[in-house]
Image 1: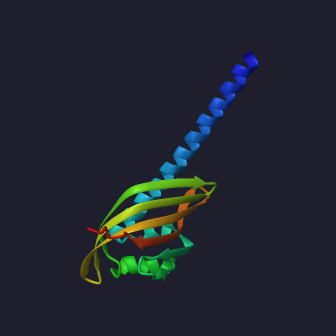
Image 2: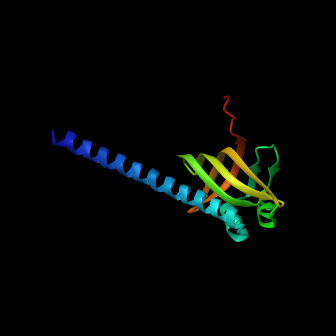
Image 3: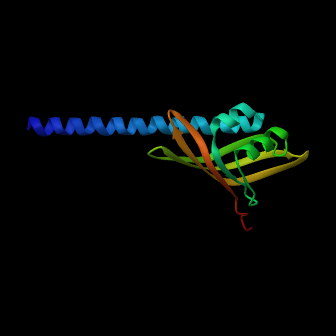
Length: 148
């Protein structure tokens, strides 16, 4: 009986530690997503470069694909100017050193001096390099318009 109880306690403790580790990684990824959101609004070149992988592929809802340099330059130059970004309905799934993030994005923009609003569903793929999560891929699609 003592052996069964001991095995149960070891299993329970192991599962608790695994759950805690995943929760810790999810929190780390969520913090990176928030840092990316803030860096995009602030047009912070150094932070954008730090958060993104050199092999970044960044897909826009209109079909345009950017690499890391183009993505950062378009934000910093004001070509893609985010006045505000609100993220909702975020989910994070960790698989090894890869994190998949989905959320809805609502933003006020001023691209090239032209005011606008966007409502998107976004998929982000983050990879862990050492102790740092970096954005490797992003794809956005327009949210469907509800029929009246």
